[in-house]
Length: 406
Image (cartoon, rainbow, N blue to C red; front, side):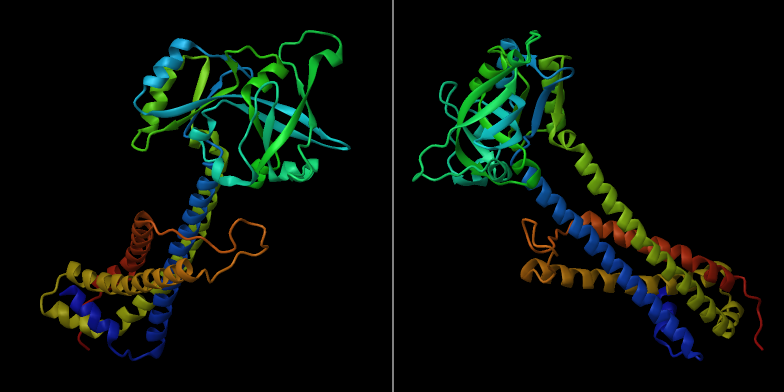
C-alpha cells in the first residue's frame, strides 16, 4: 500500500514544476554517485589483482626471515618437518646480499639473490624471462639472471655472436673481523645468462645466481641463509600454515605471508581505495539534501491528501511510511540506474578497453576492472541508508501535519 501511494506521487504531475525537477535531479545525482562508487571500487580491484600477479612472480606465499640480523642457521630436523607439512608444495633456500656489479667502465649496485635448485618451483620467475635462459651455473662457474633495469645500468649485452660477457661482482664478507678494508670484501667473476622483466622495483634492483656462489663469496656456512621462500598448495590455509611453520622453525625466525611481505603496499592501496570511496559518498550526502528539499515540498503540496487520509483513520505511522516509501523509491530508482550504468560501462571497458592510461609507461595501457559482489552490496546499502535517513525528516513532518480539510 505504501509503495502504491509513493509510486503515484512519484509519477504524478506536481503543481510546481520545481518539485519534479528537484526530484529528478536528486535521482540523477544518486545514480551518478552510485555509478562512480562501483566503477572506482572495481578499478581498484583490477589494479590490486594486477599488482598481486606482478608481485607473485617474485614474492612467494610464505617467507621465513631471521628476527634479528641478516642470516640464520638451518635446522635439519625443522627442514624435514617442513617437507612433511601437508600444506607445503615446495621451498627454496635463499642467500641474499647487496653487491656492486662492474662491467668494464659501467657499474651499478644490485641485490644479488643466491637461490637453490628449487627456486623456480616456488615463484613465477620463468614466464618473466625476456632474453636468454634461467641458468645460474655453480660456485666455480657462476651465471646470473638480471632484471632489465640492471641490464641497462650495467650495459649488459646478451648475444651469442659476442660470446659470454664476464663481469665482476663485489660483495661484503659477513663474518670478517679484519681491520683491512680489502679483507672485508670479496670479488668474483660472473656471467649473465638471462634477463627478466617483472616490475620496475625488481627489474632495477635484482640479479639472481646460485646460492653456493653467494655463500662462497660472503663467507656464509653451508647451513646458513638469509631466507626460506615457500610455495603452498592451492587448497592450503595460509594463516594456519603460517602458525604451523612458526612452531616448527622456532622463535629466532619470523614467518611472513605474502601480505606481510608487502604490507605497506597493500595498506596504501586499501587506504586510497576507501578514501576515494568516502569522497564519493559525500556526493550521495549532498544528493540527500536535495531529497530533503524535494520531499518537504511534496509534503507541503500534499497537505490536503494527508488530511483526507487522517480523516479516514490513517495513523501517524502510516503517513510517515508513505513518505519514507517515496524517498526510498527516489533513492532506489537512482541507485538502480547507477548500478546498471556502472555495469554497462564496466563491461564495455573489460571488452573493448575504451579508457586508456596516460603516459604509456605501465605494463598495460588501459584501466583494469574487476567486479566484486561485496562492492555492490556495500554501495547499494550505503546509498539506501543515506536515502532512508534523508527521508525521515520530511516523513516525520508529514505525520505531524494537523488535520484540516480547508
